[in-house]
Length: 137
Image (cartoon, rainbow, N blue to C red; front, side):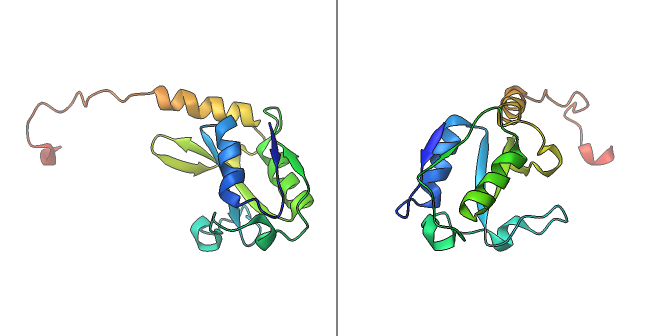
């Protein structure tokens, strides 16, 4: 997938293009590097209505490619090195988005397929619930 990027591109437009190719993944952008020591993502998250040229430390190029065979760490590094954007990829897990920090060596395809499989899982009813007061257990 190749996304066109210029000074008129909003972060949300790049996010939509990425999410169209990888529906169980999303990219979020931050005002500082995302580190493994774990800052709260919302604290430094950039509003996705911002134009790329407003936050990029480097002049945006014309295109960026997102290949299913690239790892999360490759994509995050490419965005940082080519555009000066601090980005992080998240994976859908049920109804929440989880950080991919511990699986950033997985490819985008693997991340997306893993999340897709998880979306198929439907928990079964609680076999211990017999209609009695659960506070006793």
